[in-house]
Length: 390
Image (tube, rainbow, N blue to C red; front, side):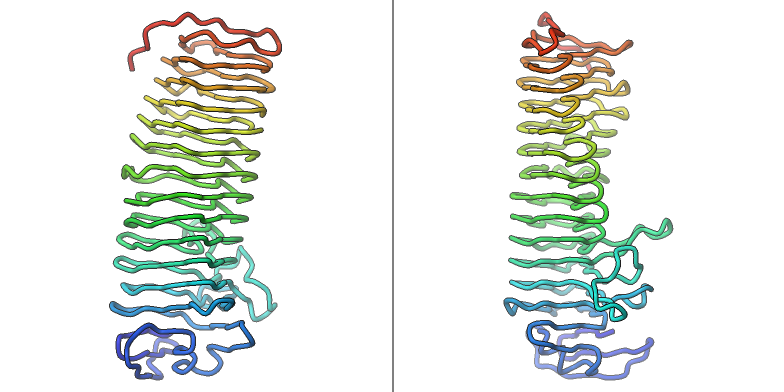
């Protein structure tokens, strides 16, 4: 382990201080670490740098990895003690124009995704992480049942920073924001994660634009934990193993500007949530464009567009209070709108070229305006009524 202080770098082996290297201040670079660490802890070969030590920053320090084209390999292995993790502490980590990945010395390949000794970045309270034009891959530890595991990059309570034009690939979870503050995500791609691409849980002030989540093992984007009022927006998903976007336990969240296609379970899942406003959402060839269930209430779906797939909108029986308005459902192979819940209002909804336009399950309650014809003449003609009270 190497602890970076404002005036020196402390090197510890097996919990014992073995070396101190003085420094004059300023940001630490890979060259700085090369001079301070034992020779077998950091090696260089052309543009590849291999680091076999955990790095911990202290207040007032910074680690800058900004030589364009540099490939930084963090050593890992079969046990947690093998992981060369990088902790921000209250310092700052900056990546610019580089790639960071893991390497297992036993194989010369990236550390296996199920290995507890995969490296990771951990950003702590008052710490900052910045990545621009970079790639972060094959990092993060798996969940063991006792330990929830770590994302490739984790922002923890009170941390901040930004990721711009950056790709996170083949990590356990790509990126997790857990009670972080004002993190900026711009043109970020999450792909081939073992689990979710991006996890948002209790984060505050996060801004998002140009988010792409593709081919992740579970959800493209998962939103859960404490509700904070930050909007969910600017997301494109495709080919994820579960839903494009999954929202759980949120109240009053605004969701907009989302495009989904070909995710294995569906486009948007709303679970145990209340008073959500979803607008400008599209789903193409999804098993369910939008799936609302598990006691969700007061849900507004506005300007929803689905094309193809099995079902456009599914309102499960435990849902109480949902309005679908100004929306178009086209080409659903089973049902355009499936209603199992109570107090469901359809207003200005067009269902076309679908096997069944609207299907209301026994025990459900719904009302709404007229829908357009379906392919199988299963047109549901609704008279406009007063919105249900919920």
